[in-house]
Image (cartoon, rainbow over all chains, first blue to last red; front, top):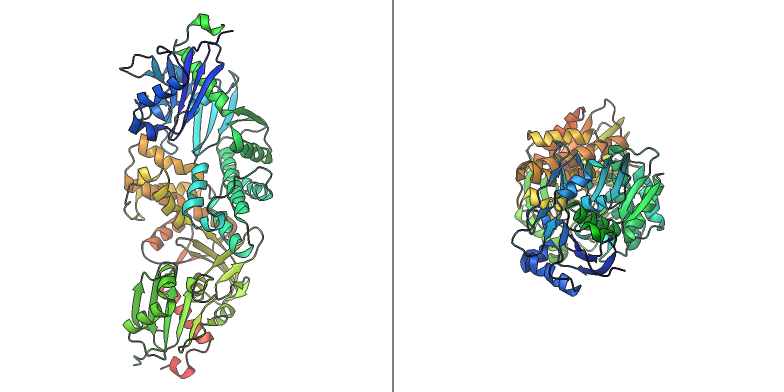
Length: 314
Length: 314
């Protein structure tokens, strides 16, 4: 048994950080989670935040570190310039850049840019989840990665062919907090659960309407006035409407036919999307987002020679 | 010439109030505009706010007052219960209720409710604009009333057959202020003008996509990162996307064929919608919203016997 860490793997987003120590086979030896994402780290210093988490996991001073996410953005620690799609996933990982001026070997995986005139798009972090999602090396695969800014990605023979962003989580949040719908959803709407009947009904309806959600937003408010809709059900309606709308819209852009959709997510959100994708008549292959990002970071470390070969089978 | 007022007409919305003195033929003798809509009037008192505006216009103490808008909501001065659609427009106006406990004759026009299980909706104020829009007494007419919560109404032989709300103005505002798009639109985006090329391009694109707007929202941000999109053009894109999306969605629900669409609006917003409706290939008949609401309030006063017959031709 090998209990000594081979690499520290960090998923460093805008508001959150997750860190793991992995052994030479990619197994988890230690884990840390914090609210010190990009926003906090810009104040506190990226190196200081990183070293604090590494110390808490008792990482050796020489342990190399591989990072993905917003830490590599222009506002982050050091910019890891976007790789333009289409791009092979392996080549994306190999594009990791080294943080200068550190004694540790610290590298950041680049994000992706889609430089289409009418469909410009960017991602940071999801490319690493994608690399760890266990996709077959050949064939076409449509991947759904739900979140604040949900990403849908088409992978063709191991390369990212194209992708799109649906800001579903952010839409829910700004509408629930700042729009007239706040009167219907209340201060703290309960988390929506997949078997809520209102979620199902509104999701199904949205799936039939090709991604048109704006026509039904105000109905959430009107139902509060006319039908005495409860706050939790109002939240379930809005969630069903937005998630169903996202899926209908994404499937118009990236038709899947009879092929399965790969759903990379975790927790309650993955459950909602799983239910919604099944309502759309799709076969869903679920991959846990935490597992995927760890596997992707481990693959990036390997691709960049940060883990010696002899340790891989230890 | 008759310079003595026959009625005071008030359009009393959530954040704004507009007041006119009209003579017995509906001509404007005086006008007042204020920011003392429902929200302010709940604090200051509806009667006090009204009397201040009437005094500023030197209205006689016995002049009757007809009101439409949110002043008639449950949170308003006194609730004017919704009239359920379908409903003849004349009957809606005749449903005006009298404010009790006042020496003046003050009446409030009711709003409309659409009690459909899957498309509940409400309006307050637009029913009065509709009454004053000069629609023919017969035939089917589709009316577009843009705003914070745009209303689309189908009128059939003088009766409101059904309506829907698209919260386009509010979506623009919350996205520009509270979402990640605020980084692209800047603090104070310039007003969008109809001949902005980005407005046209994104509106056209949205018109072709059946009301699906969520798929392109993030592209406004990505274009800021990848294409160095200027703030004013980002605002024009978002405006084109949302207005085009609204029109595409509304036309799916209320097909118009070759018939004209009646656009009830004013100022810059009416110009944007006029351009967008023409891009959609429609014939547009524009009606000024201020003129329409005054005419509707005047008609309500007549329908309720608040203006004596002899004064009508004076």
